[in-house]
Image (tube, rainbow, N blue to C red; front, side):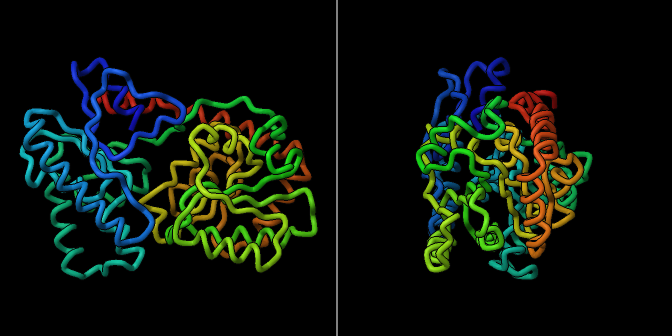
Length: 362
């Protein structure tokens, strides 16, 4: 949200960001922006997620009603219940939809399509979205999914962007402190960095590691946390995958190093989630000139981005052999790999923080 809030610097004499955390890894929030804190989003368990959603919603409701009764509102779908605030807060507002709820919960099997919570939430969405001055979302497939709540022409697609600048790193990843700390200089690194929850089929990286274990040039790295973290850690140890490593979330001051350490970035989204979400890390890797190994459904925003832009390889979850061949080609054909890197950096020019200015054009 840093870039989005900063984009409004000339539009308002006062800007207030109500949030649970501020990610300032690469660019800083303008010094004159006031931050009003609510509870931090907790992802460790589903119960904690739900708890922070509910508590965050009530905190927002009270703050907007009592402290900021006249403020113009740009409401972001995190926490998910925040989208429902206009049912109680009567003033003009715009919506920015990062993930579509309750659709995400239905596709994950947490809610059923015909359950009363789903029905009530969908009706509320329709009322809220149709009352918005404008609705923004991230991809054309998400725009299409939202069109069942309001006409498509009322939904503006604002593509996500990299939180970092476009990198000019050494294409083979030399002189990288992260790589040096593990003795991986000169290795070809497939990296997954992010949430290891139910909506991300990351376990396939271990299958790729097994397929290529006989080649010492490869390393397979997982960074992050989530429901699958402990299981993946045990599997790596049990299988004796010496070419693989799993690490917890890295400090913010190491993000530039970790992003630039990847030779190929593994970016995944479960097939059922691909039309209603896109992983934001995709754009940080593009900015570092890192080709993407995308695992998603063919109709997803992620798959289409990588396939149509030739930004790496796009695959479905069971296509392990094709993924293995793709990695070998990237490793053994420098000209092919360099072309992918160049295409990624070129594509990244479309996904910079200047995209936030599109919120001012409406």
